[in-house]
Amino acid sequence: PAAAGGPESPGETAPGRLIDFSRYGLRFRSRAGHSPGRRLVCRLALLTVDEPAVRFEAEVRWCVRLDPDDYETGARIPDSASDERLAVFERFLRYVKDIPARGG
Image 1 (tube, rainbow, N blue to C red):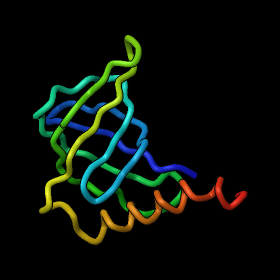
Image 2: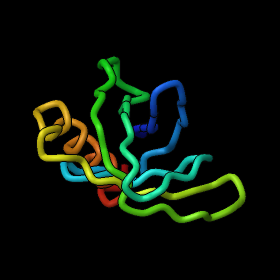
Image 3: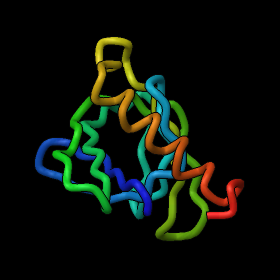
Image 4: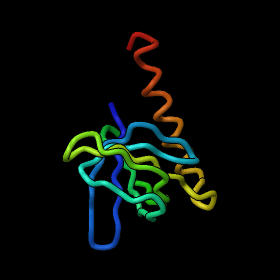
């Protein structure tokens, strides 16, 4: 099981793979690079759970080009977006990350 996320801006979609997530920010990899300060509309969806996706805004803090078509980006989630739905994703991601430690 894994969580997936992707940034969007009006008229543009850039799917990504979620690496880390908390109610304060996220880190993801995608084929698109993003400039620091850019505002993104993000959509988080769990691939293995039938729950609606959560949409929120985030501000790019940093972006590193790993390969020609591979970028890692860190973005801050404003306090106004830290609601119960984001907390659910945070708990789920912690659970998923803990599975190898429990031998699962």
